[in-house]
Amino acid sequence: MKKSDEFYMNLAIEEAKKAADLGEVPIGAVVVLDGEVIAAAHNLRETSQNAVTHAELLAIQDACKRAGSWRLEGAELYVTLEPCPMCSGAILLSRIERVVYGAKDPKAGCAGTLMNLLEDERFNHQSEVVSGVMEEECGSMLSSFFKEIRRRKKEEKNKAKHQ
Image (cartoon, rainbow, N blue to C red; front, side, top):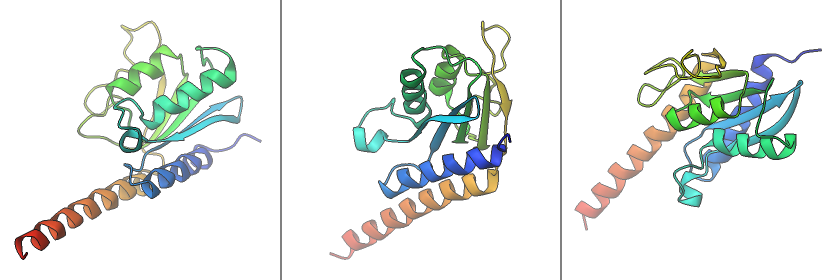
């Protein structure tokens, strides 16, 4: 029985929660090949202090190791936030067939929002894009995270003002 996009997006959401527990932006990604999860990852930029440790890149890297190839033909990537330009490039270069994401990214989304690198026929590979899967849950997790950061910063500023 083929599992649904929602099933795999729930796994990506679980990864995003792991990122949030670490104080990272809550983004999770899962790579599926032949109906089997071969890699799962979450953002680690703050933890690693490395700009390229996005959930998608970490999941792709692990999937390539497990598949024994840089070509992930036939693979699907589930991610809670629309991929940025860097991640979209990695998706194309690794030949991922299908990308399913939750929330749109109005500031860096390159799978349909700002541009669509993944379905651009000028590249030698294209990925099918499915957007908005569990969008509300994915988006609210991100909104809550950033709202809490703003609240903490305001609280710290007020605390410093009164000392």
